Image 1 (cartoon, rainbow, N blue to C red):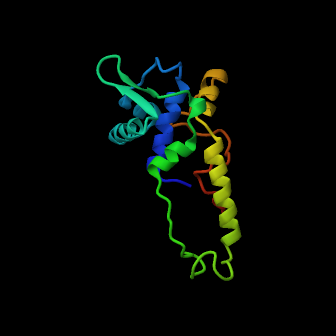
Image 2 (cartoon, rainbow, N blue to C red):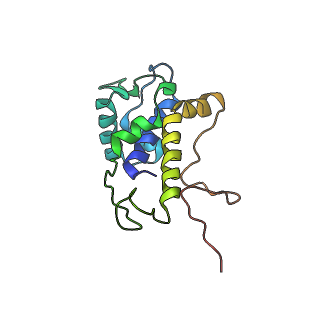
Image 3 (cartoon, one colour):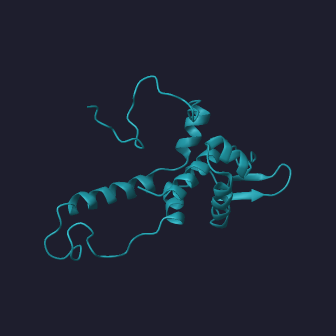
Length: 164
């Protein structure tokens, strides 16, 4: 759905949403990276980009750090997605050859159009409030990186493998 840079940016933004208190609490790039298990240099660069896009505010020095620039309910995933992802404006069909939208559609056309619509709806309709509420209202915390599930559960990251 999106690349690693976008995924890591959402991870950083979600952490800032979890501690949202009107912008008083600030976290350093290193704190965010360590708490999310992400590479420190990458998170520092991402936070710079997020700051330039006015999605976060940063202040240097002791007591400094980053906070969301506005309420998590007012920042959609789409804003982060658009900052780091580039749309492919090619009209060539990578699956059926030819030009997409001209002639008979390829076998995947309708499904891909539907999937794109669903992704746009998801990105537009999901705000970082979901992370603030999960943390502050429901007390949820991310599982530690070394956690082992008690019972297998579906994950969007892990592909189900068939046992022989």
